[in-house]
Image (cartoon, rainbow, N blue to C red; front, side):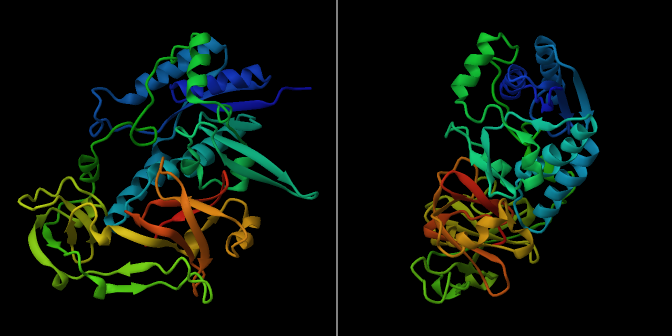
Length: 399
């Protein structure tokens, strides 16, 4: 019987290198493919464009493993689907997460299509996640599970994958600890064995975000308004989680105006700032550090408050618009919203999961209610919801 063919997304790092090695050991026909997604070195913080070194390392590993290797240029699609999206989100006052989008739109869409055209049965990456299957006698559902290594789990970054994408995905190192991956690479003398993990934007590297944004978003001077800690009269509320179950309370909605505070300075554009931000305000002389509480890109106002415990930094929950709600296994929807599952969620990568509940408002939007107040719920970022170690839901935070 012919071997199953797998195209591995080789990033030039140790994780994807070991993933390729393990697949060969499992008897797959393996092809290495490096995705070139970035052409502009003007905003990267390295001296040289990082993709050149990374693609060379990926090629050297492929040579060591004796597998075919190609570089595929996806920079045009990356710009239209990720970079342009980032600019638009900042422009409307939200803070996007390009890594989540890169997995959904590039690695498991454009890259997946390219792999299928090469006759691949699967694509594989070096993500620290696991995949399961549930068969009900008729249909198979694919399950996205956390990686074994809690310090490296990347399920948050893959929370937007759908059933088709999961059906074609393999995650060879998801059941390993990072230390075990390093040990395999050292034992097999892979050239990436001691290479540091990459940081920064997906397949771009470290960037200067202000310089990156200023490529397209122009400075627009505006005012900075300080809000004091007593603003309870400004609160309104979302629907409670249900009429008869108010144990988790309701979600606060805060709307500031310039009349609610005192002008203390100026900024160069509300779209350059994000909720919870501390650095970059360039306003001193306050007893406590200033934090961004809210941005208003329509009126070009930044609202700030003193201290990391300012009450306006904390939220009881969040809302995901109906159009942005994503159920990885749609069969979990009913149980999740009828309190039949114990749910936990994350609102950023590497955050410890915390208890939550889910329901719908009157317009069909999804409400995620926290068991206690949480800090820096940021519009534009993603929430991922878990039942035990399975990701069942994700969506863009609307407010």
